[in-house]
Amino acid sequence: MFSMLFTPLKRKRSLENTVMEIQGGNQELREELLVSFKPFIAKTVSSVCRRYITESDDEFSIGLIAFNEAIDKFIPEKGSSLLAFAETIVKRRVIDYLRSQARKQDLLLEYKNDEDQEQSESYLETEKSMQQFHMVRDAEKRKEEILLYQKKLLEFDLVFSDLAENSPKHADARQNAISIAKMLVGDEELKEILFDKKRLPVKQLEQRVKVSRKTIERNRKYIIAISIILDGEFFYLKDYIKGVLEN
Image 1 (cartoon, rainbow, N blue to C red):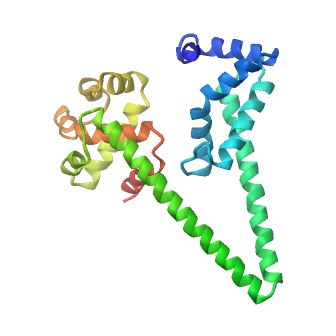
Image 2: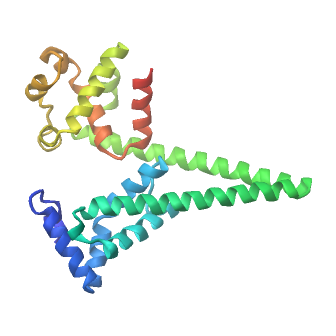
Image 3: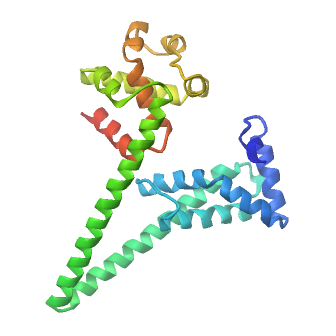
């Protein structure tokens, strides 16, 4: 039913019409729209939290409520698209939530300083346990992310060993390859060729970057691997890319 929402030429009008029906009282359509845009909500919330967010996280619930709020408050005549408007609302509500949580942490610290030594030690133990919990959870999510990335690589007949063997040896060569990947995923035409046809658009890239065809071909596997990361919700792996560019 919602495949039409993702058709470039009809998306804006279809989405607006859908919202108008919801605002008119169609609650079944509201539920379908919320379910359809859960990936968008998770990605938006994750960008604020700077970590991978799933539907089990409190922050995701805040984002879902905010998206629902955006549906009710959206006015097409103001010129903004629903997604742009919803992204703003979701980010604001999540930021407000994070700030409220930070204030609670400050109150806990004040409470700790006012209590006796036994209570302070208990608090520190709780903090230590929470840190360990977050470390374990991050490790699990990192593992899930790597497994998903491995699956995406297989769609291009690539495995991790290919990346180790084909990774550019020099830092400037790696940075050039990453820059090419960034340009590729930012161009809808080139990205479509890569992800739909499962091939690197070498000819088109050669016309748009100041790098020889031979260099692009030599780094083909690495460019594809980086493009997959940049286009997906690979938050831990994107931190790795950021580290490469900073070195």
